[in-house]
Amino acid sequence: MASGNGWYLVGPLIAVGLVGFLGAIFRRMGLEWTAARESEAAGLSIFGPEPEDYGLLRPAAVTTEDDAADEIRRLLREAGIRTTQTYDREGRTIVLVFAEELDEARRLVGDSPAL
Image (cartoon, rainbow, N blue to C red; front, side, top):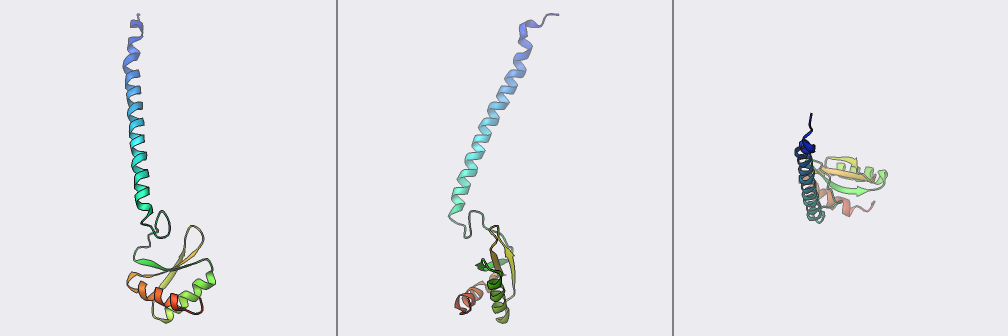
């Protein structure tokens, strides 16, 4: 049986080359789009390149010491503000309050002589 001088390989080779070429173009386009999007959002964040999402809660204070966070939470509880806490990627303690109580909580925390 004659193989036809290898012409039966041309079609699959062209298809593989075309898929590789298109994949390289789409990958390059995708990486440029991602990099442009990250640089636009970098100036808008408060705590870093990826702002944390706490749902209805907002950060009222950030501290590296658990005792200070407990003191802040006690102060806010005495003022009638509901609080909770969480930890960020760097290990800092974040005191969270509801959005409608954020201004008052930050005012109280900023005016506190104990902190």
